[in-house]
Image (cartoon, rainbow, N blue to C red; front, side, top):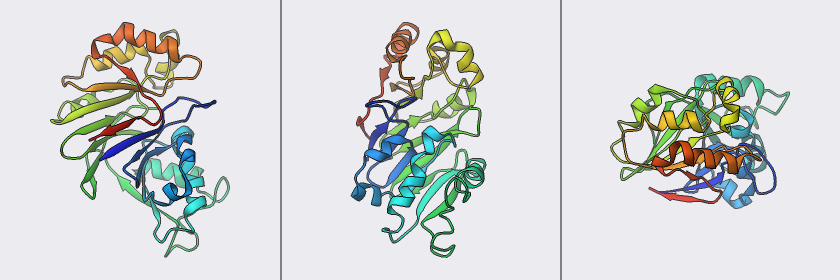
Length: 254
C-alpha cells in the first residue's frame, strides 16, 4: 500500500499545491489543488475521496474531478466525510448555485457522485486498506485519518489545534510508523493560530510531547512565505522528534 503526496501546502503559488493525498490509485484523502496534476486516466481511477473537513483548500478539486470524469466512469465517486461535513458540502458547494449537485446527475438512480457518512473511530475497509477517522479540533467540523495496511499505520491529523482526544487515540495504535501533522503559522502568529484553530511551532511542540510512540514526523500545511522561518522554529521547539517537511510527490509505503 502506497500513499503519494499530491499537495501539502497551506497556500498556492508556483510549485505549491494544497492538501491532497493519493492512496494506491483509487483513494484520495482530501482533494486540494494537487489533484489537478493527475492525468485523465489517473483521475478516472479514483473511486473514493475521504474528506477531513469542508474548507476549500481541502475540497476544491472534488467538483472538477467529478465534472471531468463522472461521465466517463461506470460507477459514482464516493465522498466520505462526517455527516456535519457532508451537510456543508450539500448546502454550500454542490447546491446548484456554486456547483451542480452531482448526486442528482444524470439522475438520482445513477449519479456521478454519492455521499457516505463516516464516524469517529469507525473503520472503513476497502480491499484490505483501513481508514479510521480521528478526533480533530478546527473551526469547522473536522477529523484526521488513520490509514492502516495491517503492517503499519500512518496518521494524518488534518487541520487541527491542540486536542487531547487525538493523542488518546494515536497512542493506542500499535503499528504507528508515520505522523503527518499540520503547522500553519510561525510563532509570531501564535494568536492567529489559536484563533483559527491551527498549530504554530510552540503549540506543535506541546502536542508532540503527548505522543508516547515512536514515529516519523512530517510537517504539512506550511504557509507560503513563512516556510523557512516556521521550519527553523519547529527545529528549535520540537527538534527532539526530528520533524521533516512534507513534500509533493513523497511516497509512504505501508
